[in-house]
Structures are given as C-alpha cells and as structure tokens.
Amino acid sequence: MRKVYRLKFGSLLLNITAVSALLFLVMPAFIVIPMSFGSSEYLKFPPVDFSLKWYSEFIESERWVGALWLSLQVAFCTTLIATLIGTLASLAMTRGNFPGKALVNTIIISPMIVPIIILAIAVYGLYAKLGLIGTRLGLISAHTVLALPYVFLIMTSNLHRFDISLELAAMNLGANRIKTFLFVTLPLILPGMITSAIFAFITSFDELVVANFISGIRGTTLPKQMFDGIRLEVSPVVASVSSVLIVVSIVTIVLLQALRGEEAKSQ
Amino acid sequence: MSRSYLKTESVVEYSLHASMVLLLPILLLYLIFFVYPLGRLFPISCFEPNFTFKNYVQFFKEPMYFSILLRTLRVSAIVTVVCLIVGYPVAYSLAHAKGKRLVIFFACIILPFWTSILVRNYAWIVILQRNGLINTLLQWVGLIDEPLRLLYTEPAVMLGMIHFLLPLMILPIYSVLKGMDANLVLAAYNLGASPWSAFLRITFPLSLQGVGAGMSIVFIIGLGFFITPALLGGPKNLMISTLIENQLNINDWPFAAASAFILLLITVGLMMIFNKTSGFNKVYRREL
Image 1 (cartoon, chains in turn cyan, brown):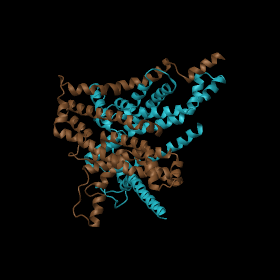
Image 2 (cartoon, one colour):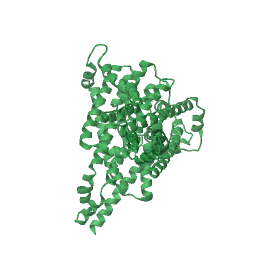
Image 3 (tube, each protein chain N blue to C red):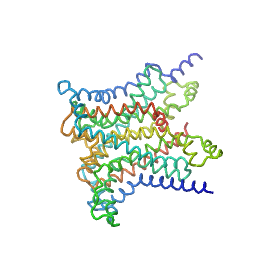
Image 4 (cartoon, rainbow over the protein chains, first blue to last red):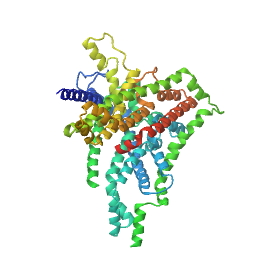
C-alpha cells in the first residue's frame, strides 16, 4: 500500500515538472502573439486594446519590407545551392570508396561544431578584404556553408536507408544509369531533399550572428533588422514580425511531419 | 551477364574519380568560405605586424578578460546543470507518454526549437523588463514597491540560454530512454525492487549515454552563445562572444582574433574529450 502511494507521489512530481517545463518552453509564443495586437509603445502585456498598428507599420516601412525581401532572396539561393551540393556530397559519401573518408566527413559537418561567432569574425575579416560586405553573394556563401552540414547529415542518413536493389532491378530491366537515377533514385530521395531544403531555408532565414557582422549598411537581413530593432529601440514592430515568424515555424513543423510520413511510405 | 554486372557495380559503388567530382563543389566552397577565413585568424592574432604573443598574454593576464572567460565557463556550466535537472523529467515523461499526450508534449518541445532565437529573446525582454510582466505582477501582489532590475543581468542571460538549449538536452535523453528495453525495469520490479531503486539502478545508468550527449552539446553551444548575452545581458556581464564583438567595434582585430582562437581551441578540445567519454556523436546522428 505504501509503495503504491509513493509511486503516485513520484509520478505526480514528475508530471508537474514536465508540464511546467513545457509551459516554460511555449510561453514566448503566448506572450508575443497577443502583444503584437496591442497599440502601446511600451510593450505592455497583456495589451489594453486590439489594433493592427504594428502590422501596418511593418508593411509600410521600407526598411522592414526591404529586409524581409533580402532575407527571402538569400534564403532561397542558399536553399538551392546547399541542397544540390550537399546531396552530391552525401552521394559520394554513401556510395564512394576513397581514402580519407572519415576526415572528409568531419570537415563537412564541422561548421555545425565551430562556434558561429568565430566563423562570423573569420568571414567578416575575409569579406572586408574582398569587398563582399553587405553583398548578396557574401551572405549566400556564408549561409550555404552553415546550411550544408544539415543537408549532408539528413541526406546521408536518407541514402543509408535507401534500398539499392531497386536500382539494380531498374537496370536489370534495361534502364541506363541516367534513367535509373532520374526515375528510380531521385523520386525516392526527394522527400529527404525537401526536408533538407527546409532545414537549409530556415538556417539562412533565421541566421543572425554572421549577418550581424557582414551585412554592412546595404545588406540588412530580417534577423539583423530585428536585432537592431530590439537592441537599439525595443521597437514594437518586432512583436508583429515575431508573431508572423512563429506562425511560419508552426507551418514548417507541420510540413516536416507530413514529409516524414511521405518518406516512411516510400521506403 | 557479366557486363550488366559491371554496370550495376558502378552505380552501387562510385569510383574514386566520380566521388571526387561529386565532392568537388562542397570542398571548394568550404576552402574559400570556411577553412581559409578560419585559418587566417591565428596569423591575424599574432602579427601586428611583427610576430608577438602579446594578445594571448593579455587575455590571460588582464583580470578583466580572464574573468570574462571564467564567466563564460560558469554560465555554461550552470545552464547545463539546470537543463539536465529540468530536462530529464521531461524526457522521461515523453518516453512514457502515448497518443494525444505524446503529440502535445512533442509539439511543445519542437515549436520553440523551430522558432527564431530572436523571437524568444524578445519575449524574455517583455517579461523581464522594468515594467514587464514579472515586475507588474509582483507590484500588483504587493511583494515589491519598486520594480526589480531583472533584465541585463547574468540570471537573465542564463534564463534565455536555458530556454534555447533545453530541447537539445531533452531530445538525446528521450532517444536513449525510448530505445531502452522496458522488460529490464519489469524484471527489476519482479525481483522486488521499489520504483525508486529500479530507476536508480536500471533506468538511470542505462540512460547515461543520452545524459552525456545532452550535457556535452549544451555546454559547448553555451560557450559560444552570442545573441542571448548581447540582448539579455548588460555591458557588465560580457561573455567571450560579446567581448569579441566589442573588440571588433573598436577595430582591435588582433585581440578579437586571439579571443576567437582561444574559444575555438577550448571548443575543439572539449569536443574531443566529450566524444571519447560520451560518444555523443552517435546519439546525435540518430536524431537526424
């Protein structure tokens, strides 16, 4: 009898800890979204009235919309390049046999490991010399390096699970290598590539530390604009942008979940 | 027959030549935008223009800089321990949750994981500022007369970091607990073990791999954290990363490069030690 009682107490304590930790994790969303609909300059929570003031301020501000547009462009290019290059590399990694494979593997995932502030100052130094500060090319190159480890890890694990006998079957039936790749391999690894692309897009779209240093005056991305907005003036426009970003992350999660289901079906 | 066999071989296993062609773009990109810029840091830190170790000596001798290093280590350590204490029960509940509950639990962990760190720090500013949520609440209850200074302090930085790093502690522990053979615990009960002793003697030791992985990754990422100390910390609680930014703002490149190089050495060193002792690479591979 005592044992059961103790067990119940233990699991109650466990549940309380878990639920409060989870509430702690989601709290920001519950604060930022209601606040974005207020009209007070002073970040009042809870907001006293309902208004779309900060949303319209965002849409009408050339600086904010320009930053959003630049971020979208940079993230889009980063996604394309990183997904392509990363997939090629993971093909070589899973199917090739060459000396120094472990070393190449370590190098490819190392941008994930090196503290990003270090990469930021290193790239800043280089760009200052090359005149790449504030350019799209500079932002895209740096973001591609940051996104590649994710693409590589996702695609490598995807290709490891790939059933090679399907390719053998296609070729046995007379398909050549290109046809086999296009009509058998590619459709099967496509869900993995889309997952990689989402990771790459978010990596670039959310990236602040490198952008903080290399964006100069001309290349202000959305995170950089938010960072300045928070740091210099605690602008309430940030609340409206943040709310939009929270919705974007919810959509991302749902998308990834759907893709995972798709992948499970195809393999 | 033999020809088609050869053909299939070449698809299943790429030749050295083909592998090199596939790897060329990534390696070239890394060389220009990753290896070369990082490689320049060390020369920048010790040639100005003559070779000198002055910046490194200054970093360790000057009490101000050394205390920043110590603060960085201390903050990361505290954050790691708190993440473990809070994260373990969550991982445990998650591993035992089913159905709707599991979905809700997971959503709560994954949502912040995918939300921009800027958004999350911004929320903390709203909560902690002078006339923010906590101060308003405490004044309303009557516990304090004057608003407390909560923002731009070290605990504020820790709070922001814990909020960001907690999922990184939960996920590897969850992954290990989930993969554990549930019969082991049942066997312990059957042999008369109490729930507590079954947990302490079976579940916990078996989950240590996940604990090690979570602690390593949280500590290492914590050391290089930049955004949270920059937004929630004040000028009095700089960490290495914000120190580097300050040095760059006054254009002291050699010293900034030296600080960055020291942080890099610490990170890579710890990485190698943790990798040997906890094998955290393995657990994280499984996550992706």
